[in-house]
Amino acid sequence: MARGQSFQVRNGRFRFTCSQCSAKRYMPVPPDIRRRSVRCYKCGSQERCTLNRRDYVRQPQSGKIIMILGSGKEITADLHDISLWGVGFDVHPRDARVLRLRQEVKFKCSWNSQLLEGNRYVIKNIMGGRIGCVKMTGKTLG
Image 1 (cartoon, rainbow, N blue to C red):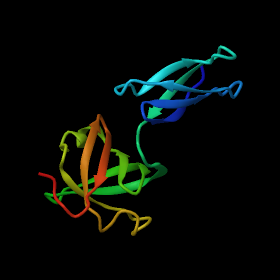
Image 2: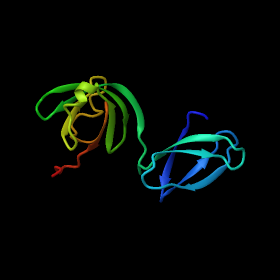
Image 3: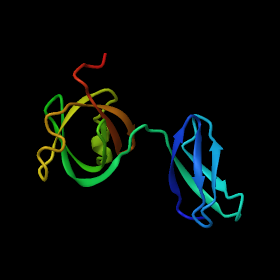
């Protein structure tokens, strides 16, 4: 079984394309599934599929950034990906313990000052050291 591909989910289905024989097929998927192993109906090869339910594309981006908490504390993070509406990054597990869901943060980026600065973000997801933030649109979360 190969490492796998990422597939976009639309209306509860995704279009599976076999990496071996390029056969295509739409497959239904339950709403709570993030990964799935699929066997090709044509050649029989099995492939691990990662299911992406986002409506927008995230661009891979790497580099060191500084996350600034509301209290003024600065945490160094490794940028993982970025989109128009959010950012994903990794922090050290000891720093992740300080973070809470729905906490407002800002970012500084020394290698591109216009990349993240001037925007406020809200922590949406914490999985170990992996953090996902959503850009705020002028209103605070209550």
